[in-house]
Length: 337
Image (cartoon, rainbow, N blue to C red; front, side, top):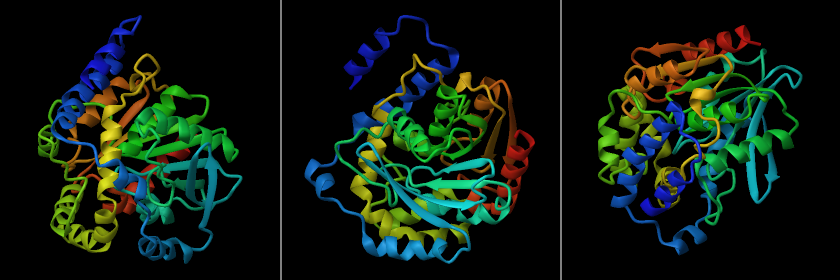
């Protein structure tokens, strides 16, 4: 893997921008160390894996009972993408992108504060939730961004306001940087992609090959929810409801994490420092996954950005503080339409 990356770096014909250098350094610091301490899952485990129908049947009623929320699916290349859609189809489009070990349902708590203003699109990113997983596909950030752009074109969306959390934030930022003609405004919520002046204990563990985002038993699930939530009661409740699905996906999620850190974005193309549209950098002040100092790096590099820090909130503001999170997103996007 290191030889491959050295070759990629050597192919750069022009010096990398500061933003690209920071992305590259982040992959060096975390990705290379993690890969050196972990092995890929057995291919036959990935090839034979199938979604757990019981889990899908349990989550579908969450939105099936909500007025005006519709579930859609479409093929994009060799991928299947499933998404939720709600709101006025003629209103400005608002795209919500979930993070790692997450799914479209994680955005449901903020929907009441967004309805009436937008056509809200909430996909399961390829490889996650009800969208298709193919063990032969590339699930790096670069390819995920391309799939997302092709999906938007396929469903007839040419302009969109994008909100991304964690891994979804990294993809949202790349989409905005690479395709500014498509993105009106951007919200980066506890987003992956750039280092801060400090890093978390979680990142230290990753560099030793330990990944709390990929639980393998109920105890690991408790460690995961404790990591992403500041509210202990909410963490315990989330562990109870998500344990079955997360444990069932353990090998797939391990594979997807290795895919994410082993395939760097094309750093000769536009990256986060090249984002030109109005951008809100939103962070939970008690985030134990991605240190809050990362927010200041995004704010410094993105010219038209502003920062909003939520006290008493961890890595998932849309679940832990839906009222504040939803209102902040709504007001920011409306201001920049």
